[in-house]
Image (cartoon, rainbow, N blue to C red; front, side, top):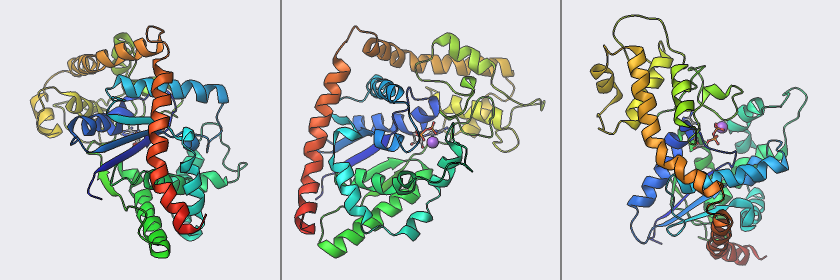
Length: 343
Ligand code: ADP
Ligand code: NA
């Protein structure tokens, strides 16, 4: 089929931070707004992935609402994009089981992410907690997420390339055994660099870091943003600013953020560094806080509307409609899969 189908997902772990936004979510909106009319766009809150790490049920429910509100607030349009919660569409799990019947244990054991997830889990004591099957087979569920919708293009960060390769391998293996039912998707690499922690700039900005000052949430107030940027760790190397992510990671992160948000679209972060090389650190941080606040203001306003009661019921309505559309989309491939497998 020549129709383009774009699929991507994010874990519903609460309000996204600036790294999630600049590294992934902003591209989802751009793809939506620039898509040809016949392109199908599907974005999922992958709660079945989230439970590979222990979750409080109450918090998970709350985080799903927050994540959905955030996706709408940044500009995803439920009339244009299918936005849904993964567990509302049972076909994802159904296809995962079928794929796992042909997925190689050896291949899965070479996936690097479950190893890092094991160490990153906030309350995990790696030596006491044995590897869970779900964490190990997570990439097979991810493959099912993509293949069940016949996705042709999957926007992801660099860390996900290995999983996309596995997805194509599983699709190919299935098709060789049963006939051409699954579509091999292309990887669409996110162009944005990693955004780093504001307090430990050699680590990426992350939801799981314990210090809340290390990240900016896309719903932070102007005051919170300004305070966090003011407190961002830089170095005491004097002289003109230089863009050097290895030797000067804090400064590089500030320049990178400024470049990502700069409305004048200076071509490269090096050009931007050259332009501001003699500006004081304080002025640089003020500029950055301003740029972030300008960018986030409409997002924050819409988020507060969606979660604050003035649009009560809107989130439930969007989730329900998204689930209906996603189930219909998934059933197209699932019906073919059941037929060729003999189920
Ligand atoms: P976190 O690491 O905060 O738990 P996720 O793993 O849920 O975030 O990532 C969701 C999406 O955001 C992924 O596409 C990931 O590549 C992207 N992402 C996460 N952190 C960053 C970051 N610091 N810089 C750029 N992109 C990021
Ligand atoms: Na992560």
